[in-house]
Image 1 (cartoon, rainbow, N blue to C red):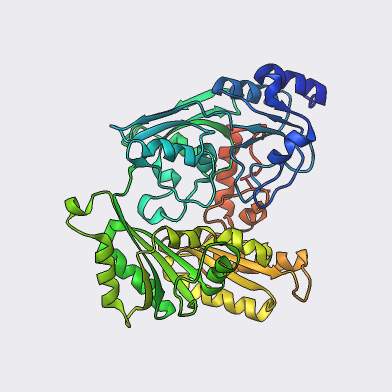
Image 2: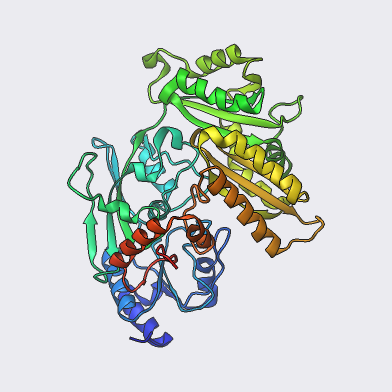
Length: 476
């Protein structure tokens, strides 16, 4: 069936969600067409359903008329998976109105939420019950979007990613068009065949539209301890992580590395942030460490900050050369302000990569050497999650650099660095942000033929008309 004309499409979708919830004017569509970092396209329409039934009706109509749909949550993704292309033929299915359901089951320690509920909204409600959904991010995504991208964050080492905390989902399927798949279980133990909900985790909306979810939540910490640590050597960075895990076990919630250029960028561009090591200069590399416990100091019998301070004192001149103790929110402000501060430095070339923890040191040294030799005018601002092997290896092309910014050179750099990550170090070209139009070519470059063939069969089974999602996970 040929795609309907614009007036036909508009009238049909308006009848399903109401005229007020259908945007056709360019000014109204603009914020849905622009991605957080990449992805600036043109949508045919923006449709904003308020219920699972309305989502199902929209999906049913669009599949029947061969109208491509792009599901969108808070639109904070960084690989263009939630924004339309330039064709002007795609309908953006905004889930921002699916926010009426937010039910806390304190006894089961779960939350049932609409896909449009944001992370901040969920945590504000959970805090009333002494609970949290501890996926720590710099953005405020929707829960549906977090599931679609399998969000990780800075505290993954303690709590895992979204996949590890997802108990149930409700999904509107592309085939049969508009059919609602109810997998809304609050069970932690359910070994009854395929775990079908996982088919919709981390695939950017392929195969179905997530409308509701049941997530596992956690007690709020009653005490935390923080320190900003300067390791004696790069090898000490990994050795210190091993010692912290041995000493503190599950109390270790974050272990974040930051280079000198990264910290300096925050100090230079974020008001109210000063050098935490003053009067000493900013070190070449530092580590933000956090411990947390859900028991009070009185119940636990341990003062975590005191225990961390004692531990670091024993490591001085062995693994630690300097440390700022008990910085709390001020230290986390540095970490959370990095991405925004780097934008002031020039044209950002962002890499969200992961390698095995044991390879982090060798990778960082090899990658820096590659930049120095092949792209000496570029500046590196790297930071990341040493505890899970993830790194935001952000490179900036300064505005005043010679040569001037060139897209072909950037592509050559990107291929060279990703080849290093994946082929030389057995890593991932997308540690957290998932696969979207921006990086799909690298999925097809690195995923094995066997895995692409299987993924393609799964995707065709769920969505034979390819009505949903931006990426074809099968062979191309």
